[in-house]
Length: 193
Image (cartoon, rainbow, N blue to C red; front, side, top):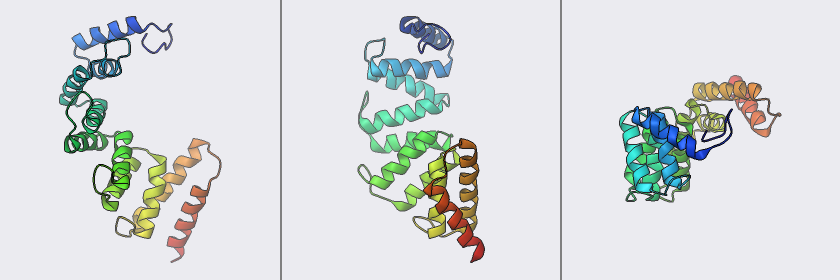
């Protein structure tokens, strides 16, 4: 009901079903209802209540709650701003399989706005994003291993990530790109060295 999938959209009824699911301790519903509170979408905007609900989600291993709680700490929305806590929760989400959390951490260490820039940390989270299925991260980490940028040069890992990237691109039905060319050239360079 909340999203209007297979039924007419009815936000009020959707929120009511989220609340019923929360009463049954269905954790994904707790996360989704918290998003409605956080954004004031169909409910009064109560960001601190959303943060408390995400804490409950994190205690029950909900990856999306970890991501949302980490973002709340980084932004100081609904809770005090705490960069260390924000990074910790984003890290938990990324290590748990959330590619968006890994991408955010990768960008945080690339940009250096809230923490010092770190190519090593950026590369680490880039590889986690690749492990979590991020095609762009697969491309980038392959080239980093090939060039030894932010990580020790490692041709076997460069080949591994390059081949995974090309395999994913094959199935994504995207047109041939400059990135694909770069990876083919990298693989050829490694294999002919």
